[in-house]
Length: 101
Image (cartoon, rainbow, N blue to C red):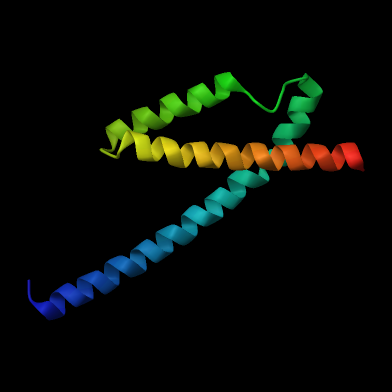
C-alpha cells in the first residue's frame, strides 16, 4: 500500500469511527434516559435499584456477544458495567429528587 492510499484509508476509517462514536453516545443517552421509567416501575413494584438478577443477565449476555464477535470479554464487560452503573446512578438521582420534592 502506498503512502497516499494509506493516508486516505486512515482518514476514511477515522471518519467512520467518529460517526460510530456519535451513534454510541446517542444510544448511551437513550439508554440512560430510560432510568426514569425503570425507577418508577421499581417503586411501584417495590424493587430495589440494585437488581442482581438483571445485572447477571446483562453480564452473561455481554460475554456471549463478546465471544460471538471475537471481542475481549473482560473489556466489553467493563464497558457494560460502566453503563449499568451510569443507569443506577441516574435512578438514584431521580429517586432522591422524588424524595426531596
